[in-house]
Amino acid sequence: MRLRPNPDLLWGPPPRESYRVTTSRTEILHLVVAFLVLTLDIAIVRARISVSGVPGYLDLSNFALGLGIAAVAALTGFVAHEMAHKVVAQRHGFWAEFRMSPAGLLFSLATSLLGFLFALPGATVIGGMGSRREWGETSLAGPLVNLGEGGVFFGASVVAWPLTHSVELWVALTFLALVNGIFAAFNLVPVGPLDGRKVLRWNPTLWGASFGASLVFTVGLGALLLLGYPSL
Image (cartoon, rainbow, N blue to C red; front, side):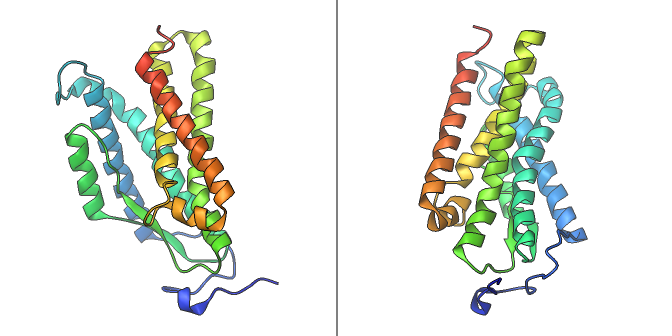
């Protein structure tokens, strides 16, 4: 027998009984705007850090070439993460849609122009939850998708190198894996409204395993890129 959510925890529309995944024009608009801004942010940061010895210099040619990579990074690291939250929440029977944060998007753009990125594009808003398990499963879905995608990108980089010997392709694939690792690790930090706090309250063991895996994955990929493997 399915337990109904506590009415005191509900706000917005009541839980859906159909368990269907739905969307709206408002959600699509918010998601597209946030995706475009985050793509721009990542492209700017990537162009800046790729120019050695010239602090704050933005190579416009490199920026243009990196827009495609940045779009894939934003699509997999951000959009897929938020949609994982949405799908799991709606499969539990709750209303869930992404809403952008205009202030957060402006802040992320400002940090990218300074040479680093602190992304606060918005969040998936959920109309109440009935249990810690439902909160935990919904919150963990996003980081797990990031880790899965990161693993695919890293695996592709390992396979691509002996086949193509293209350093540029290896760097691009490893960078995409790193972006997904960063999204997973950051969101699993157990503070404030981040996913990690809700996962920790639900299942500390599962939180520790997922957070530890995301940290090892992210730090390891960062070290590989800094060392210049496989061009060494």
